[in-house]
Image 1: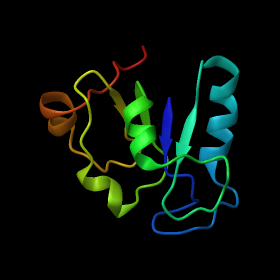
Image 2 (image 1 turned 90 degrees about the vertical axis):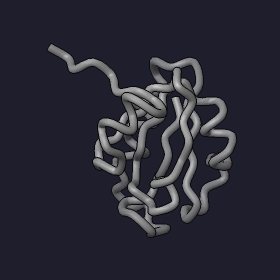
Image 3 (image 1 turned 90 degrees about the horizontal axis):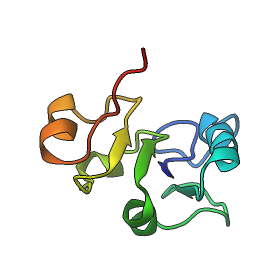
Image 4 (image 1 turned 60 degrees about the horizontal axis):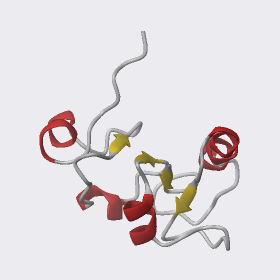
Length: 103
């Protein structure tokens, strides 16, 4: 799993109270590997965007940075976009996919 965006809000380096860090902690309990990336946040535990995109089977948009709007996803990657950065059509027909709703 890769989390893209660890800042509290878009275009910020402030990670105080960021839910992305809480999510990462929860995922680390159940996932084989969790990568985190952010172009603004200074944190030695983060990896570069390219590595996060290449290695993640599941991509979670943690902060809606403008930089992420034009990302290219692999067809087999699951993209979880809680911010609505991408249209549903883009994720389901061109790149990436949306997970099925939980019932």
